[in-house]
Length: 357
Ligand code: SF4
Image 1 (cartoon, helix red, strand yellow):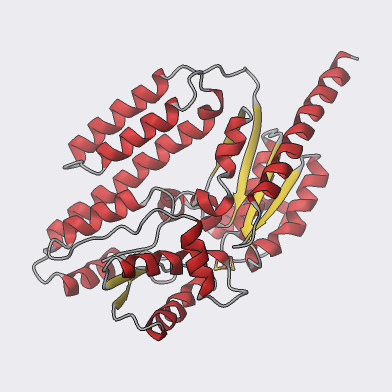
Image 2: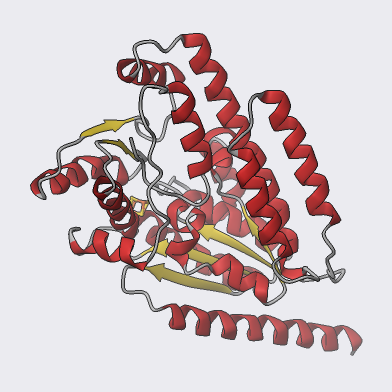
């Protein structure tokens, strides 16, 4: 059984599948590379949004390695319908497999999850499923919590690569946790270890928030590793959207609309409302800038852009917009990031002189 990648969450997905489907061999697809995207793009409709292409590339690579059960990645917006098209494309290419959906319309319903797993593993008890389901959720929360700390500090590491190295160690040990107690112990251990890493962080570093569509936010390859590039420039990065945010901590849409204030009256679908609400929050918190990321042609995020621009004008906070597709040039992204960084530095300098005068 295989599934598509998104960030490092394959560690948690593989953990859950291995423990509830002991009768099935779990195959994590090879890490995303240019080849994955090329493969996915080759067989995708041209104008489909890029997460579709990445997922299709993952499926093709997994099928080539022998997978014969694929987990469909569900979701809101158009993505909710993509599974059927991907299945048809793969069948037309001659692959024989079972395609199962675990998430309906972005809602994770544990009982529906159980029934689907039970069909694949008739020996599975509800107690075992409930235990590993909750444990996986805790794992994801631990991952997201440490990632948050890493994003805030990695740009100021004294020893280059120290955060990345420790993070790799954490993920390796995380895959081997045995229960809630060992997970808790592991989390505390790495929380302490990350805090001990030497950083040289100024009192008032440049702060940039990243908002936008969830796949491009959470799968670093799809956004040309934008967070890593910002960190290299000594910028503190804030991002709200993570799996635990989406599944557990996501505000009600009425609360998001309240956060968005006058900038939005109605929900605009998928993560668009979130993008507007969070950009306003970041502007009010005095962030130096915001980066908005989306797949090319992502309707909800295109909808959010006029409001983002209004926020940018009203709060005098620059927003840099990126659209990603299979053709996006990494060099172009890096050049624009470089210019954005220089502009933020110049604004800081200008503000400093204004205060002196
Ligand atoms: S949110 Fe954007 S990227 Fe995701 S399915 Fe909808 S249009 Fe595509």
